Image (cartoon, rainbow, N blue to C red; front, side, top):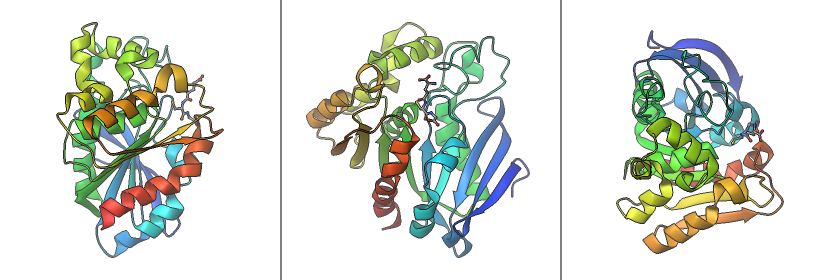
Length: 283
Ligand SMILES: N[C@@H](CCC(=O)N[C@@H](CS)C(=O)NCC(=O)O)C(=O)O
C-alpha cells in the first residue's frame, strides 16, 4: 500500500473487503476521501474497475451502505470505487451554506472561477488522480474501466465518458441530471464554477456533448423512477432520449413505475447495472 493512502476503516464483505481511505490530493489541493470494494477474485489476480459517482449530499460511504452492490460485485468479480462528492473543509467562504453547490456538490467538473478553481477539480480527480492511485495500490485491471452514477453522479458518469471517448468500456446511470445547462441545479452549479458565459458550460453538459456528435458512448443503460420528485424540473430524461436518437447513440432508458429518487430505487436496479457493466468489463 502506497504511503499516501490513509486507511480509515476496513470491513470484510461477501468474501471481499470494503475499505475507506483518505489522502492528500495534488489535484484538489487538500484531503480527499474514497471507498473501494475489492471482490474475492482479486486474491487470484487483477479485476476490472467500476467507478460509482454519487449524488448531491452523499459521501464516499453512501453507496457502500445503501446500494446493496457488494453481493453481486463479489460474484461478478468487479472492484467498486466510490469517490466523495467534493473536497471538504477547504476554507472557501460559504462552502457549506447550500446543499446544491459547494460541499458534496462538486458536479464532477473542474471549476474555472475562484475561489473554487483551486480546489473543486472533481473531473481531473475522478478521471486522473484517483485512477492512478487505484492502479498503483489495488489489484485493478486499468485497461478495463467502467463508470456509473446517480443523479449529479449520473451526469458525472455521462460527462466523464463523453469527454474521453473510448476510455470506459461500460457506462450507465440512475436518474441522471441529463441536461445540467437547462435545469436549476446545473445552472446554479455551472454559474458558480464556470461563471456566467454559457458557451463554456457546453463542455460539461451531456446533452450538448451528445448533440455535438464528437464522441460516442458504449451502449448506455439509464433507469429513471416515475415518482422521482426531481424528474420534471431537474432530470429531463426525455431530452437524453431525443439527443441519443438523433445522434445514433444506443440507449436503453427504462421508466420504473412508482420508484422515487433515493437509494430504495438504486438498490432495486443495481443488479441490472452491475450485470450491464460486467458483460463489457469481464468478456
Ligand atoms: N437534501 C435534498 C435531497 C438530496 C438528495 O436526494 N440526494 C440524493 C442524490 S441527488 C441522494 O442520494 N441522497 C442520499 C440518500 O438518499 O441517502 C432535499 O432536501 O430534497
